Image 1 (tube, rainbow, N blue to C red):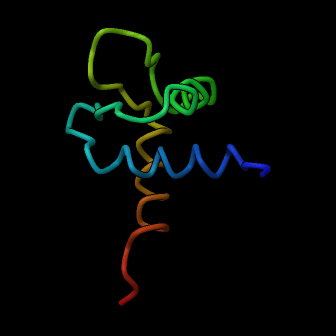
Image 2: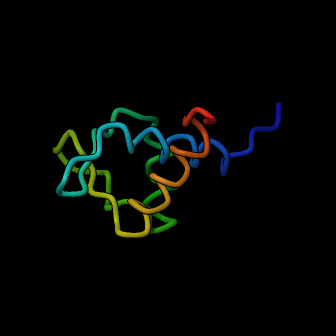
Length: 76
């Protein structure tokens, strides 16, 4: 099966929004390869560290919220 990695990255970024705190950090309990791609795209800081969370960039925060609303918000 061909997998669209950009769609996976969007889903992971949207789900990072669930645990996003006021400091722009979210739990990084997702696939390491996807997190590395998000880092390469400039949406999160380097996920390779001892912390259990990762810092989202300003662009990452904005995109994660937009994707979360698009994927998971109920229609009114």
